[in-house]
Amino acid sequence: MQAVWMESRGGPEVLRYGEMPAPSVEAAQVRVAVKAVALNHLDVWVRKGVASPKLPLPHILGCDIAGVVESVGAGVEGLRLGDAVVLNPGVSCGRCERCLEGRDNLCPQYQILGEHRWGGYAELVTVPSANVVPKPAALGWAEAASIPLTFLTAWQMVVDKLQVRPGEDVLVMAAGSGVSVAAIQIAKLYGARVIATASSEAKLAKARALGADETVNYTHPDWFKEVRRLTGGKGADAVVDHTGAEYWEGVIKATAWGGRISLVGASSGYEATTPLSHIFYRQLSIFGSTMASKSRLFPILKWIGEGKLKPVVGATLPLAQAAEGHRLLEGRQVFGKVVLEV
Ligand code: ZN
Image (cartoon, rainbow, N blue to C red; front, side):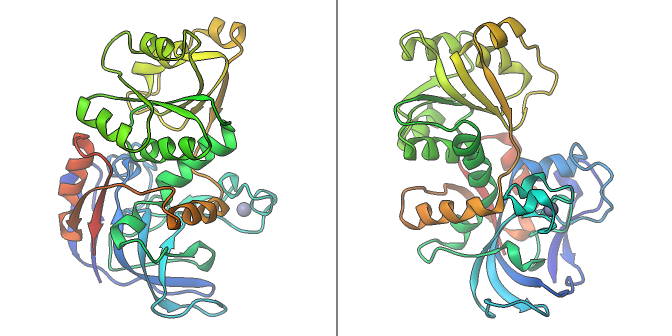
């Protein structure tokens, strides 16, 4: 099969395009002919060796995949060759206590497609049959591939961790990112008033087009004061954040008394200063979050199928130009997902 693999850790130039042996199909597995694979910052972290630094090489990246069922292993039922599918990127054992209580993203054997196992920068990818979900018919391949990781991540933050309620002020940081694009829409779906931050007027305008009620440019040093002003001095009731050390104190100061912050990454750095007085005196709650239960892809695809949530594709490239795709992603100039078409 044609594929893109990383042969060492480093910049986009470590990505190589060429011929690779196709993965075999084991019992209870499905092999999917990839039509589109969306890029995520996770791909960049793995490529650089920041995430999974001991991963054996060569390695095939790519966790967000849409395609058609090409082959099924022994014991797989309910799927036919040619079915259009979206792949759930979280792979878990399916047998342990946490899997069975629906918290499979806390399974001790939890893996992410394209990080801990070979992913979708390829013509073929193999996954457990539990990871295969029907593609909403109305969506194109690039749109379908843009859904899983970002919408799952945002769903757990907004719905499961923050438990956003109608009428609340929800602050979504860095609105141009895939997770934030999803979080803005999910928070609106749950009846919140959304305040989105971004680094440029163009990105702020796109955030408003997605449903953000108010926008704030967070490159201004006093951006958190603007969030307070927009909330009548109160601050945001709930916050979706992954901006990291540079903005962390601002995020805390932008949060209302008794407010909740859900944290899913730290783009500008992991070593942040937390003014603890704000946490206990103002009674803030901080929720760490990574991915979501596989089950959450069902309501997400339902709402997307009904047009209530929309994946946003920012750029598409052929698979062979994966390195250029990484450059676009790292340049942070694209609003929405960068997608490779296979
Ligand atoms: Zn498990």
